[in-house]
Image (tube, rainbow, N blue to C red; front, top):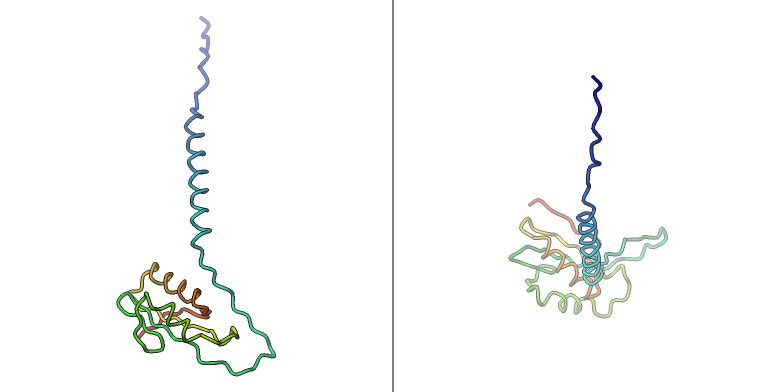
Length: 135
């Protein structure tokens, strides 16, 4: 007795669902790219030259937390931060003199930190360092 092998049909792969997924991914990245372009925070990289030994002005020190925000020891609200920094930096033209150091508290959220950095940038300040300290 001869045994014959039965031909099995080729497996069917549903390519329609792959096209739907690819289309949704394309739309997601197009929409996400539009949001990134509008709300980007540009932080310039620091630079230095070997011959620049001019005396630098004292940088602004900002201590930021969820409940408090101080600029050089003066309490400032988040709404007033941009105008307060702009007033302190009025008339200063050199980039070295517009330095701002941010000292975040442990309770500072990423969103509030981004809002503070954006306000500093809009006021004309240059964030030179943002560091954590342990008290």
